[in-house]
Image (cartoon, rainbow, N blue to C red; front, side, top):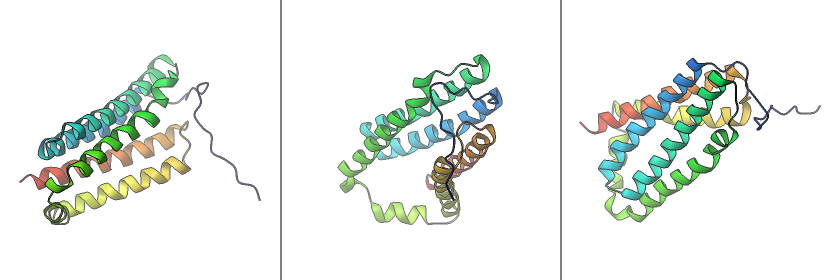
Length: 172
């Protein structure tokens, strides 16, 4: 029994069923992530963290722009699709490096206590579950399929909204 591989997005692929609605929904988790990272970055007080967060935000915004162009102009601007695989990991690496460099300034016990306190713990758990699902979807779903994109975007929106609410609750 042979495994069939899922279709992959290439520079010659033009997803036919992508709509402006899908692109707009794709912008929601990007905006929520940006808001969350601004709140954390300001609390953390690290320019390096904010730079990493800005790169991640830019990568997500560029991917949204790619979907808008695909939906509105029926054109695949390949570098807008591909950049996310490069820029986002660099952004997350800078955020992690900022955390490592400032480890002494981070009160890990206080952070962990705040994250697992109610009701914020529920929102962080939903956010983590959503990110786990996004990893599974990246490996299993067809990125050229509009249904798969809706599943991914609604899951990502729920996860990012949960993180955002959890962070808001921590600031009270």
